[in-house]
Length: 296
Image 1 (spheres, rainbow, N blue to C red):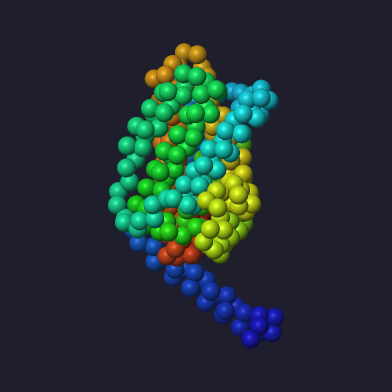
Image 2: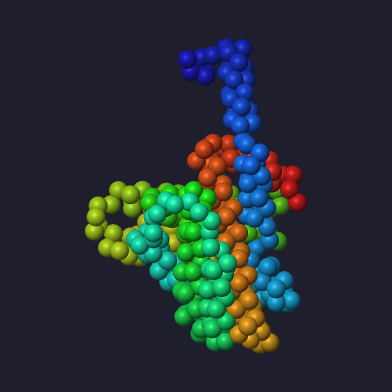
């Protein structure tokens, strides 16, 4: 019987049943799963990487990417997109798809990123062309490692693209709506592009993708959307490393903060995805928003 043919009492009974079903599902979260989801909210809704870097260097990064010289903006956007296309090639075509769930190697990846930042920080913006692809590749490996540790099966295109999606998660900024989840705003903005790219990759026959993400328009568009968000995080890193008093050691420290941020984003993101696979996105999002509403 369709809803518009039902009597008032029937509609009420049906809605009451849906509410009971929803409540039953919501109440089936285990104590550990609720603790994990609270952790995810804390990680994903924490201050953005720019604020973390500013706190580290002890100086406010007041310029922001929009007030950088135009040629700097162009170069940062170019290097960011190029680096993400390279890691997309790794994520889609060569990433290890082993399903073994084990603890992630966060500290080892932090060391590698710190060393890359120490080398690149000495040369400022020109050094970014060399340092950023290395740092981005290290971050991707760490993201994939964290994904596996949360039970993600990286043999599927959608899961691999979800690793790239993490680069768009910058945390909260002062301009964000305090009543809205920054995390779900980004996921919603990227959802159609990610789904279209994943469907195309999954349906493609062997050899059709040519081993290059840039050669696949739908993947390229998804990467561009991620790059547009990632470039502002990269700009904060460049601004901090351009401060004359920092030197190589502090420049490496900026990269430590940078990868630490994306490890946090990855941990929160794949906790949420793990729970979504069990309970469905709508249920997890509703519970997430409940926690977020009372958080802070």
